[in-house]
Length: 188
Image (cartoon, rainbow, N blue to C red; front, side, top):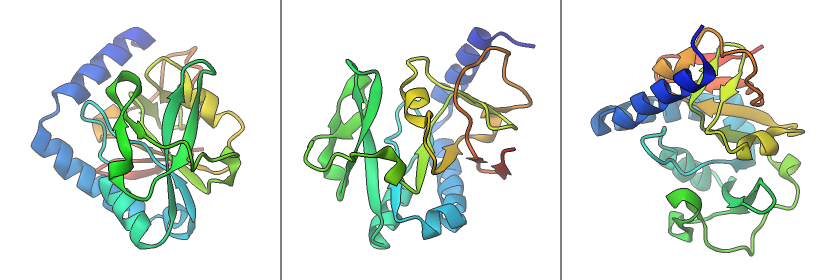
């Protein structure tokens, strides 16, 4: 089995080298699949991320969530606390480059006080296994966020980011669902 570092490097390189047209096409398929999921359709408060470096796009999810009057929350990194704080966003113009150049909410007015009031959280990652294991970017922000989160965890990934098994020792928190351009995986 490939080491965690080799898998991380290989997957990150593959995502970053993914052609823009393929990112857009795959992202469209993935987001349309999520829109059909019960967890998204019935959820009222949804945590979502702003993509970076060719991650699966989330703009359609945000737009449709807003159109259906869902409360959409984006994370901002709290480096000192090692956590993500989520803020309600009503317009993508409320996001600006923040930690590591990732788009984050610009206003602290609408900070979510209790993460467990979210019905679902949509998360990125570098690689995933079929059991819902997640290899993140290494800073543990989503790990800390997902610890104790009781809502549904939905990962967005390209199908090539799915591996049969992650290396032993990966401490990342598990997800309930992985949605790719080819399939929807319910993790056990």
